Image (cartoon, rainbow, N blue to C red):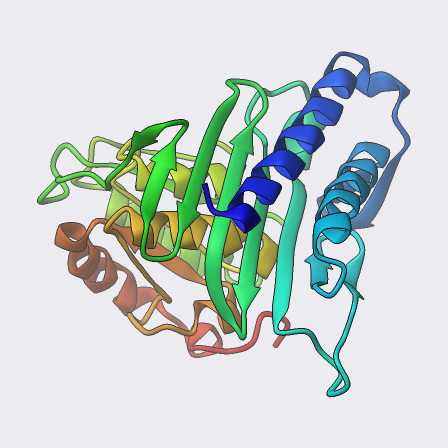
Length: 276
């Protein structure tokens, strides 16, 4: 395994072990409300520290972007490092706090703005999803590919409700209604990183969500791409890092999803920065 990917796997498993130790005593945790329907616990913070400690020992010159700690780490004389680890230590915090077993650890590595490797780890099922640019995507030791589903009939989609920022709820619900009509169903498990991993391994045929952050999608995007899938924004372009709006599927379904979504894109959803 690639050395950087190997370190990411080690960090993800360590964070997953920490999370699992707290899973049966959630009632003892200190929980803070970061914003509307946006919670953080001491487990999130400890897991992120655990990940960064492991990565930083191996790569002291790299920088980090974590959900809880923001940007930190080494920087070159121009003010930034070429390598940046993008970390969501506990993707699905609300699920975790409710004892709902759908959450994950997500770690991605960017080099000069391009994703190079990614890890999504599910501590409940002990499933490890990994990807290395140009080397494919894996679930544990098995190569994975996106599904071969050709059309909406029989397709299973994943999504995420815009529960934190509901400015675009009407547009989202219109998309949901039209995508639901001819499919086998739509699921909303609550961990975007795992949703993307599920597209990569064919459990979902497609996925879309609005307003995600870089740490939500960093590893998962690479998983999907290395598994033969497509990732775009709502308009079929590559501005999903800027907007946080993503459409993900196998190549056969992607244009169908975009054609269904496009009529409901409001002016405010057209490739605007996340916080615009």
